[in-house]
Image (cartoon, one colour):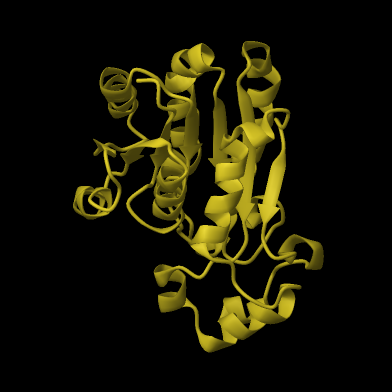
Length: 250
């Protein structure tokens, strides 16, 4: 129980899994949460001594159970990475309230619920929160009325957490990934979209899951001990050049 513990939501794949592997290699005990139980079982086998949390962050009862499990098994929590998210894109006029709420329930409500439930453990450890938003939360873009709004709200929630929880020694920061070369993105992005992103990003490429994981791990580490309330865009410079790509409308 002397080993530092991080709870990562949405840990079964993508940025969450990459972060889990990276922080495990750095000596952290990893608690992995995902509602996709099959994918989570496969992912957890890749990380020694990981804690299996098959829960949904949008359900308050399941959130409470997840934190109770971490308390029971690990006895502590030093960092919470709120990475779980729903990527649902569509035009404003086709985004009905049910679709809107589906996105908000995971992307925003889940961050609020997990963070609130973890506060007592983070107070004890003087730990940290790292919330994963998106470049879409910093600037408007095509087809992202629900997704972008949810991520913008996560950015503001992070600042609120930093302002209120700092007196307890709890840090709260936010990472905003730009386009990341995930299996899902590559499956749905046409060559026109890929080319348009490359043209718009100063580094002329997508980021990798591991690169986003490095930013997250840094903010969880003692190297960031005086960093709180910050929004880090790990985006290859995308924010500086603007968004709203015509190819995405097709």
